[in-house]
Image (cartoon, rainbow, N blue to C red; front, side, top):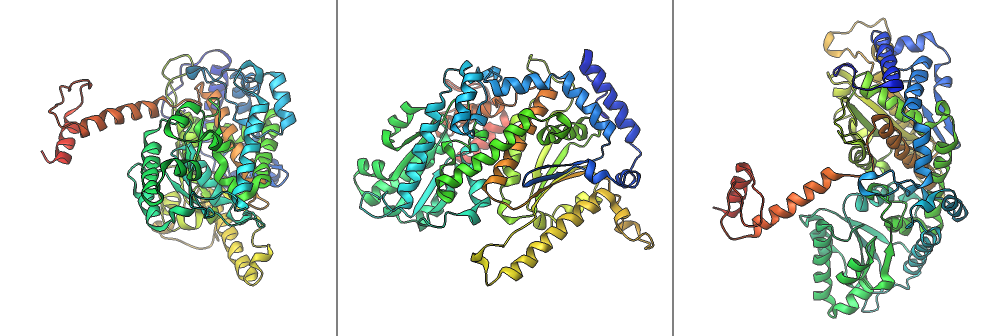
Length: 567
């Protein structure tokens, strides 16, 4: 690593790490353009394909030798054994005493049974029959709503569904619903899906002003069913419905669904048992879109469309589980990410989809990667001596070109990027009259995607060499990127894409020796927020020396709360 020296590693990991440091030194003065000039077959040798999913790694600053040395680090980190632990149901989330079996949610039923027999049984809460039962119940609810058979307490048909959640219970279904709107079920009633997550009530306030309470169904999604943000929004929604519709029992029976791992808390809050969908303690929130948390997406796609989404992810699961490292797409994503982060000193990663439907994908991947691998303590409880997760951020590519691409092209930070685009769009009959014009717009998006990644990598080598340019207009290039080319954006390819990123995160966690499945920093923040709320609502006196039942705070917090109180 360029800025941290050589970390305190031992044995084979030490040897593999040192070899990569030396490799980075050898490539430090080599421009990406030179790597293309050296090897006319670079694109074919550094791209991988899985059916309708194609990945081009050739614009990364790597060689075959780099990949071999990265594979040696993976082997020294016992990656193969860790993958078997993942798919065997071992308790790899040690701090919470849980396995991480989100992959089991998207397997076909017979494969769920096989997983249970081959290792998933190690954790008694994994019951393939129960998992399948919840998926079937989800489909039944979707069919009932689409058929107009789910009615409000005054007999009107439900037309709007509001998902109330936060974190993975919001961002996963929100991202996927917006991404797959074009795949909306064609032979069912149109159901409008809305999302509420912010604790300040601003999103909910807007919806309560425009929705018809007689035709609105709320889905309260919370793994613990104790998340303050979610329950405050849900309680406000309950009050709104009761004021408009009267009898609260009927309101709860007809206008609320609950999705949680805690049946008792759902019931205590008022969710009727027949309106409850379950998820499982061994599914982390940011990995939960494959579970009943995905109900809003199933309402968009229909039950069978939702299963196609799961099937795409399952195909990537099988590829990840069985494919040698040098052909394995998620493993290569992870190895190259570690190479950029730890050996080239590139600690920022931009996600740049060239498709407006993927507007929320950068935020989703930011949560997936930074909440998973934003750790500084190893599995053995020691501080790491190397960088872990980079800063992950991004925006829809055509918009980003008019915002922060200036920094990517001519700024001082080094940034690695993921370009994501579909080869085909606007081929359906619903766009018949505008198909030609829209097709040209998609070609423009493709051209921009390819051009931007080329200029970032090659700089002025991508431009006519005969043109003299003043310094202020020059681009050095050397910014690496990977391009993900989907045949088209549909439930199957989106499932593949998301599963690939999930497995990438896991592989990187193995190489960094951290646990990607807990989030104690988030939990600590929640605890302090609860304490601070008590201070805000308490009319008594308190100071930075502490108050009754409250730990000591700081003068800044004391001063700010005083200002809020008008003291």
